[in-house]
Image (cartoon, rainbow, N blue to C red; front, side, top):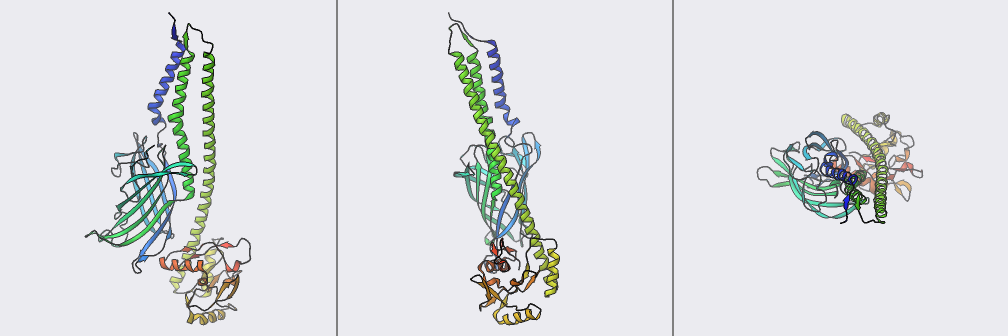
Length: 488
């Protein structure tokens, strides 16, 4: 009878490997939870609001709003994280449009809402379930109502496969918008929402979201809708999409290592140890070679996979650095724009206080504002002027010391006397006047981009920026791309 047995060292080693594998399977979520204790999530949101004009019975036109959107862990209780979600939308001038905070109780391992935690009981997920191309419940901070997200297909974002989900639903925002006229005593606010999410399926990580919504006033007694309040659209900025795509990529790679590569490596190692430690009276010359081959396969495969992981990690690090630089640049530009808008509002305040400004008063007010801001080329006052007042306005400017002042426009790249039309928008005051003489009298209404900004600004009563253009005083210069900020 042939003796067949495993060497004692092989049994001990295999036992240790088996224990390690079992501990890993049951404890990996504790040591490497889906949502870490210090979890944070931030994104720059492009928000476009289009407020309804009840006099014109039409929407006034889109305005760009500033939005803060973030998640952060506030407290941990067992395996439950208390996560605060913030959404704060403001007009370019800083006036609030919508501001809300929610507190969620989230299971650290699964990402699900936990009953009894947070500011109210919720079903569903903080973001989305893992590996599920199916319907699930999601709570978006704006609306505080369950959205049944339905799978709509697979897409790629920067090479990362993602699932796209969508939901159309209604929600009531009366509580959050109680600062609006008549809300909540006489009127309420109901919204029709189209919400879309892009989720990395292995981890359930949110890469981006987008919503398009119409908000309606309704009568509190009859519950019938009266008229719209706002039509708005929110979406991630490109740098935030790229940033979260890289975070999701690394999270996906870690999840694959934890759930697939490491367990498979343990299984191969377990088999190799038992294979090498197996003894029999029958001699086998090929056993050492098979063992060596298995070890080589496992080693080479692990090395290749590890190299791929490190390459992806380095690429993600580079992209994160690039996005950080882009974000710094965006922040600097935004700060400069905000300072420029402050300067405009300061000059506007002078007009309101003095009812009107003389040319000297305007010059003094602008120069005071420009002491703190280097990136403003020029500031001007553009009075709407009817055809009958043209000659009077031109004559008055010449009497005030602007030699040869006249209303002008551009034709074939040349500055010429403005053609006859019903209404003009001439640059009447200019400061500083050094190097800006050609701007005097230029009719902004003669140019489509400028006129479009004027009309929109007048309609919504807010600052509006033109598309990139060339100032008339910079014609022929290099690096002459600029834009105008218009404030009524």
